Image (tube, rainbow, N blue to C red; front, side, top):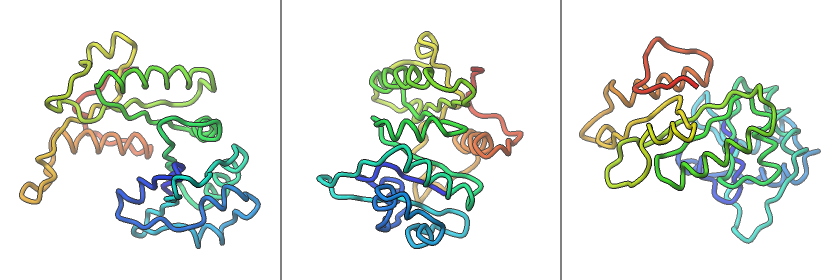
Length: 211
């Protein structure tokens, strides 16, 4: 289950070329209505093994919900799915923080721009105030992208940001004339997928630093 809690954008559904189905905002506003039957009518289906809950509410629509609603929704989803991946907005409110607090594994995706590094440091500080037994994974994306000013991996390490995975910038691998072949990009993505799923492979990522 891919759960997109940014109800105004629906970016996850957009990335998968899915149309967000109505109902998620209503479910979070009225958590007593959440059950397996209601979710079956609300989920978008992307193949046999991936289901998506998302929304694309009008920007002027109030889409606030409570931490208790998140608890109820996740509780029902846990009875139906082995994995629940939740995406939260860049600046989370209290209910979004609760979704992060109850997660077993939290992924922070950053790039090497100064803005992203600053926000990652602040996010780390926010995580540090809660349960220490959480596992946090820092992923640096688009490493080596030309023309973008920012910090090197060595400079990030000086502010105690040591990425677990670094995904290299390889846009040419995704063109129609260049089908994806095994290489730096595919190796690190395969290793990351194994880490998230708990099924680690023997492939070594392109870059990995001990935390």
